[in-house]
Image 1 (tube, rainbow, N blue to C red):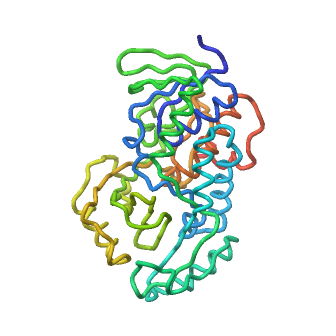
Image 2 (cartoon, rainbow, N blue to C red; image 1 turned 45 degrees about the vertical axis):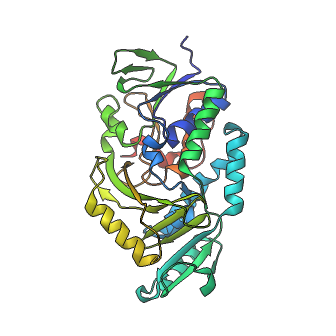
Image 3 (tube, rainbow, N blue to C red; image 1 turned 90 degrees about the vertical axis):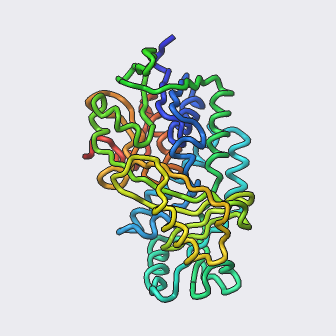
Length: 357
């Protein structure tokens, strides 16, 4: 039965699942349309970094970027009632174990840029001693950053999916072909109706631009990363050349960014470049069992997400998170749910309105 308190979520990546979990925790009936699930989504081809400081560090206005990203990151704790005990335990452990390092070659004078930027952002950090640099190239300096953390992308996706199914949500395999504010038509002809519809399918959301005009502004960014065998302790070691995200039993090194590319074909040249960069910063990194993966992110003209209601169609959207889906997904859940329930929006919600373009 369709009621005003029912929601169809298109997309089962980190944004779609977080929206579903938050909405369900507020009493909404949820149905998720999932073309892909878990590791097959773009969110599954990700490091799982919840790292406002690292992400803001290279932005043109790092202090402004950090303020936005940090406010979004706080929603992981603010929405903890939505996640359930297993995911909350995973998040608490990730925060407790966080070992986030940023390193750079001494030759590029990054010290003159990095530490002033971190000070301006208000980020707590300290310089690394030589013995704390671990396996990085011998000519590097670095800092340890407080407040950022890392989770296994697939573990979070699996726990979120289990949480919403436990709460009574339906996950329907299929591809949406057309949508409106209250209806979704699938490729097999099935028509689903609900009080509200939200599109949270990454760059795949652009396929609905005929129904939802705001989605016309999306552009794709293709990225490769390397899935590696165990490489040592958990944490993030990031540099201008790439990052190594370690989860104990596995690790990921990434990532390329190919603007305007929307395919997921693994390209030998991109993989070779990624391996060369990995060896430059981590000479002893074992790449013998590396498995290359590729995914596509969605970006907006200003680089910030679109989270809100498309005015022309009435459809809710939560897209364009670029490489920061694991930071913005809980905030998307809060904004979408507040719009449905006619509640007060977060102070910064206007920054992400889809009609700003």
